[in-house]
Length: 157
Image (cartoon, rainbow, N blue to C red):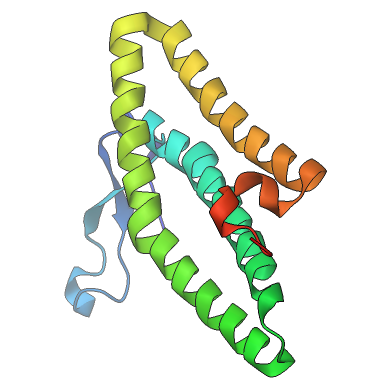
């Protein structure tokens, strides 16, 4: 591939590159524009490095709750089948419903906190979200899975 260095005016422009194999041989010397994403958008950074890990951590919490609740099933084969089906269902639910919904909520709150409180509001919001996930994990690992469940959902109730 060939990229002319003098055509790099800014990150949003397309760079001409030499195309081989895409056109008939007579036109193989022509340059075709190719858009290169050189800078990530801030919302993509928040989604990639904050929202997605939060969703994965929450999915792990749900998987721990599933394992806790299936302890009530006596037959080992039926317990394993139930865990697999519930984890598949939970993973699909998180991937197609919870993650997009959480991303939308985070984006709206993120936008609102930046508009109303500036950079400090954005930082406070993101720290609050991280603190919530941390608190849930702390409760689960220090006090057990039943600490994050309502009393009616606990085993033996």
